[in-house]
Image 1 (cartoon, one colour):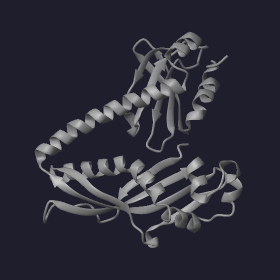
Image 2 (image 1 turned 90 degrees about the vertical axis):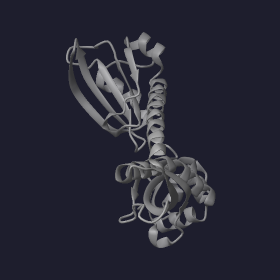
Image 3 (image 1 turned 120 degrees about the horizontal axis):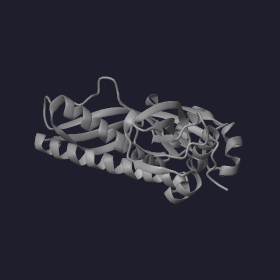
Image 4 (image 1 turned 135 degrees about the vertical axis):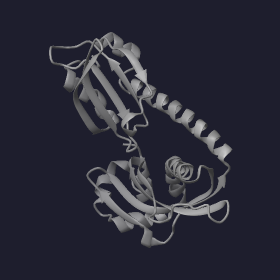
Length: 263
């Protein structure tokens, strides 16, 4: 998994922005995130190789206190969550008021009552839920239109970049073409709420086996993988796998198809 994974970003109940009074607003978001690898090691002041044993001695409250005392890590998490926070703000303000929005400040609540934490020593992760205070200002409807177009363009660009990254994780187009007869590569999928994805066809290994795969990167930083069969203009879905990590993609493909991606 990524060292910082944003699990969810939602408005705190009843804290959605309102434009009743002026062009400035303040709101709060409930943010859940999971820390792993080097980030947890740095948080606890431990080496990665002994992290699993160290986590056995740490509870959720201790992890939360360590995070609250680490402003640099708070900044890293805010940076990771800011895109989703800004998107949620834009979508809400655009739908409700037909206006644009700009954030001017973003920080974690310091009051411990807003925080909970849990530790998974087996996975070497710490999951924390806290609140983020956000200040911002509304912009005019013309700006909202510009923002809408710009964000749509950026989402499509990111989706394409995600697809290209997945292609490299699978071995690259030249290697895939040579080893499994892969063709018709398509990047940029955004169905199922995905951030982007990749699909391609490949030589059918045997009767009843798939000859098509679609790999989608989800907001949880895991992949949803669909196998199917393409024949002419018809398509038949075989299986869908969810919550797949990047290092599991190749082995999943090999198990489901009987084709090998490495010598």
